[in-house]
Length: 187
Image 1 (spheres, one colour):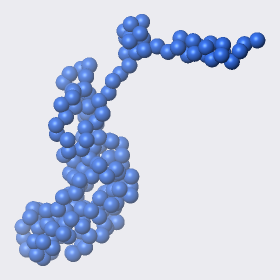
Image 2: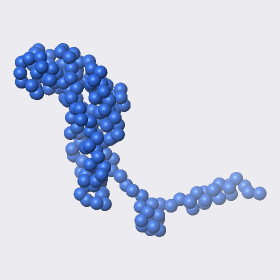
Image 3: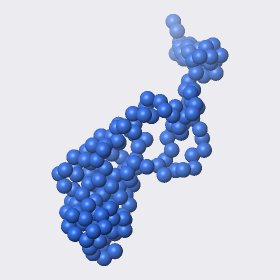
Image 4: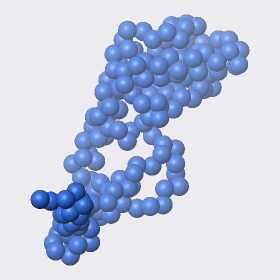
């Protein structure tokens, strides 16, 4: 008859015998190394000094060989339409713009290291302060849609330019319409 104390000792020996360290595994089979990974940098962190080992240099900061298939496909997948437009003095998202934002949400969801800068703009009408606030509301409206579509907040950056960066310099409705926009920029 096995006593409880003996059972605990047997169990402890079995558990200890089954445990091995990574170094003992590597000594037995050097090809079987447990990979170490470097966490992705925090968005906006340009001080990343730790490098990722790469078997085929040159590599980017994530350990992906530059010029690899993965590197080439990521730039191809970025949606073509990168501007959404707004009505005069409005910040609500039009249905066509919602479709564009859905394309970007899908891209960002498939590329977890990607992030996007939402740049808000207005036409020249209105005061500088009013236009900066309106452009910010437009960028935030686009951001809210992307958040609802599943994009993480740390993948989104908003900035307001107001009337400061027009794409059309004429003083008519056609030019003003082109300037009332949010640009979706992948840095």
